[in-house]
Image 1: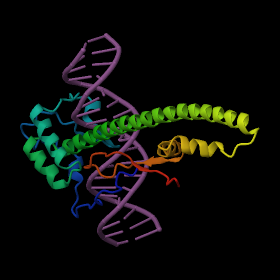
Image 2: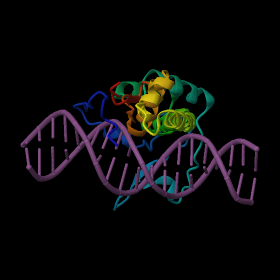
Image 3: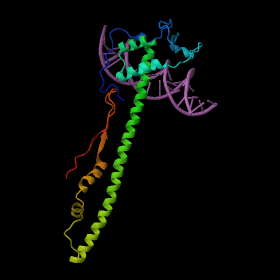
Image 4: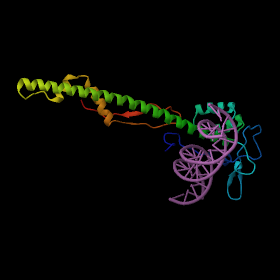
Amino acid sequence: MDWHHGTKPFVPRPETLSFFYNYDNNNSYPGVEVKQAALMETGERSVPAMDRGNKEKKKRLTNNQIELLERSFQEEIKLDPERKMKLSRELGLQPRQIAVWFQNRRTRWKAKQLEHLYDMLKHQYDVVSNEKQKLQEEVIKLKAMLSKQQGYWTQKFGGYTEISGEETVESTSEGLRGKSNIEHVADQGYCSFAVEDYNTTVSLPHCHWPVVPY
DNA sequence: GAGCTAACCTATTCAATCG
DNA sequence: CGATTGAATAGGTTAGCTC
């Protein structure tokens, strides 16, 4: 999935930002309530501190921290470096923790959006499905009426009738045009949707219904 | 165009918390 | 105590920059 589509293009800062991704073992953020899962450089590769001898415990963020992060997330779903540093200072968390929180939050947000989208589409499907069911029942009724009428004309004029089935249906149920179109559309139409922007709430899927000639 | 880098993603792990 | 939640990690992708 292309999450960059429709969003502002990513513009990296000219200076290195690698420090965002490396925890400070010297604890340059005093008062930090969450233990840092420091990446400790070994001979081969970075190994998370928690996987090593000095069992760092994961700690949850405080309510205040989450509240501020949440407010910031509501303002803007993506995190620019300046905001990351500002939040880092305000909350006493490592910039990396801010980035991780935003990443996880976006994941949760996306899951929720998909859930809502599923509910909406299911609802729409149910509506169209019911409509189709009603129309099918009406078609059966009309067909019964038609054969009854045809029987009458056959009896009266001896086997020939000018009234075609189509004409009878058309003239018998004026309001049906629209409805039968719905049935038609239900078979041939399609909907498309796109999560265009992180900051836009997902609207109803945009439906491209085929134009049905009258 | 290749290589580097930073930011982002999904999938996963695992400690903390809940029922 | 098993299920759920969420902080953190791993590894992959994308896009801008430099040479």
